[in-house]
Amino acid sequence: MTTAITEHKIDRLVHLLVKNATVVVPGPKIAEEIGVSRSTVWEWIEKLRELGVAIKGHPRHGYQLEKLPDILVPSLVRAELLHAEIGHKIIHYFRTDSTNSVALQLDEHEAPHGTVVIAEEQTVGRGRLGRNWYSEKSSGIYTSIILRPPLSPAAAPILTLLAGIAVHEAVGSVSGLEADIRWPNDVLVNDKKVCGILTEMKAEVDRLHMVVLGIGINVNHRSMPEGLREIATSLARESGVHYSRQQVLAELLRSVERYYHMFLTEGHAAVVREWSKVSSYAEGKRVRVKAGGNDYSGVTAGLDSSGALKIRSDDGRNHLLVAGEITELRQER
Ligand code: BT5
Image (tube, rainbow, N blue to C red; front, side, top):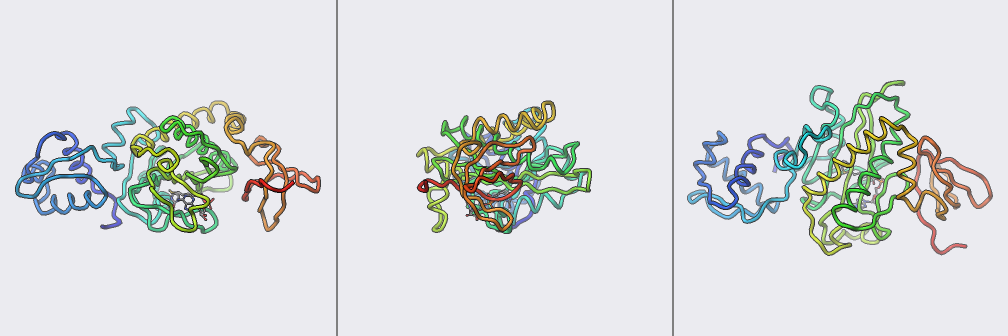
């Protein structure tokens, strides 16, 4: 399978099969309608099968969907997002290195505000500080939302918190699971990570050109690989339910849009307020802090107006974290 951007015509093939879901569509008819050869149709059908799309049939007799496919091609996602600003343009890959890397290479014309890059699989999914993001094919959501806010680069951290609130809400409304947010960028279910957020940007000193909200959500993973099992989980593992990724994604994009507008009209304080309502890490949590080469323990004491986390360390000092890691301390003191 290539790492090229998904051809508009594959999207049309999926759309055609979905529209005719109850009947067998002859191969030649598909080929004619989307303007490719029959062998290309066959190739693409195989590609879709590799992704788990259940298609019955054969080039000679025609093809039929066995059930509606849960892939995130633009036509199917857009159908859930009428009139949306975020997701009005969707760039889809069956496989790419990292949706954030793709997004950062796009210019303003290719990727206006609200463009969303999606992949079914990432080969080099990225976390912060060069870490990896495990991106199993067709099981999770790997997306980068491009925002072009009329703001200075100092606003970027608050957008990470905003994305966390949106994920929290989307997870709750699709699954009913009670999620938590660990400052600054992890969404947890039952204390294990189901989502990570990587915010990157292109900016000048006083102007943001583009913010890329990279969001990875573990949705239908049946198991997590060795090394992640202790700290990571998926929505399906926690609830025993298999979810429509289309629905999770659509819910996520709608939530991001809603909170983004809240932020533009009400400012940082609204994001800080909403985040503090849904994160058990906002206040009174005993944590270990790793930041800027320092390592200490303390208790969280709320966010400041920019979204930085206040910590009172065990030696009585007050700290303000603008970046770094915290982990919950359960046993000590
Ligand atoms: C993050 O970094 O949590 C940000 C992850 C962002 C991923 C998205 S996917 C779409 C977009 N394109 C990209 O290339 N990236 C973004 P960080 O806080 O540094 O956490 C990374 C750590 O989380 C790793 O070192 C592992 O310990 C753990 N981890 C890796 N894969 C995971 C997964 N699938 N689920 C839960 N934890 C994972």
